[in-house]
Length: 216
Image (tube, rainbow, N blue to C red; front, side, top):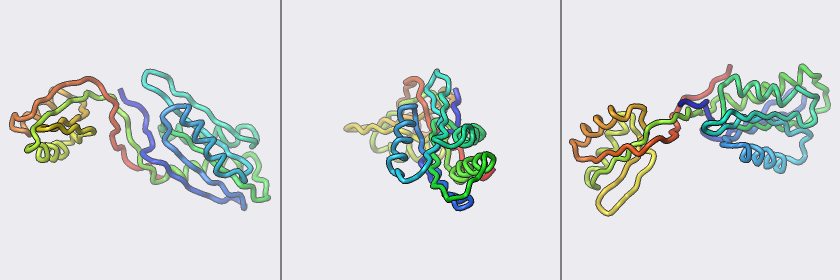
């Protein structure tokens, strides 16, 4: 099961339009509680701004996406909704963006506001590292301490990067997430010379690097 792209880390960007300053702040948010908490934190950090417009898309496994946008005092439909459309257009989820505006004394009109808020979100997305979250099979690979370092290096070269390690007195357990567990078990056996014990422990959500967003 493949979920949408998620931001790998927070970002910020700023644009100026006819002396109005637009600060876009983006945050990875796993759920609605985190999204609303981030919006309130931005409002608290920038109390001198006239508007704190926002949009978020969040979801949980097995549930539909939850989407929300707010114009925060701007004319209806000129801020939050355009911001949400930009997030949708990039296939993003688990994300919240807030655009803080300091009014520069020049009215932008409805069309100008739509462009400005959209452009602010596009700007914060440029260079954003994203991950794709996939539900994969999780394997527990147990090997003695003397072989652990070499096996982990070999797993990484083979594209099976451990996401969790448990150290014990004489052995290490490495957790790896794979799309094809049967093939992965054969690979681990080959890479370890048959010295590793492998157990299929069920499904897990894994973050797969999916590149960097560009201007578009």
